[in-house]
Image (cartoon, rainbow, N blue to C red; front, side):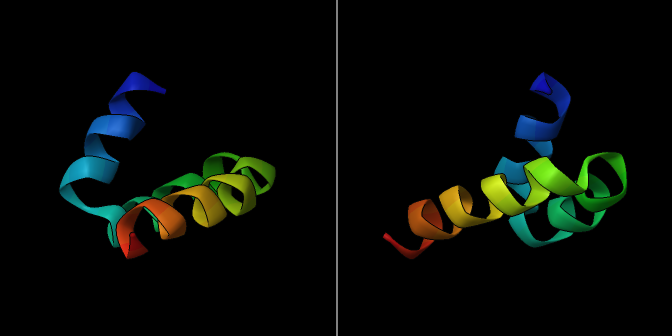
Length: 40
């Protein structure tokens, strides 16, 4: 997960495409959280 977090910081949009195949469930949860963080 540490690696994914690093990718998110550099490419938030690109990371979702990588997270989806790895774990669809977490993708939805992270998407909502990350959206709020980036939007804020």
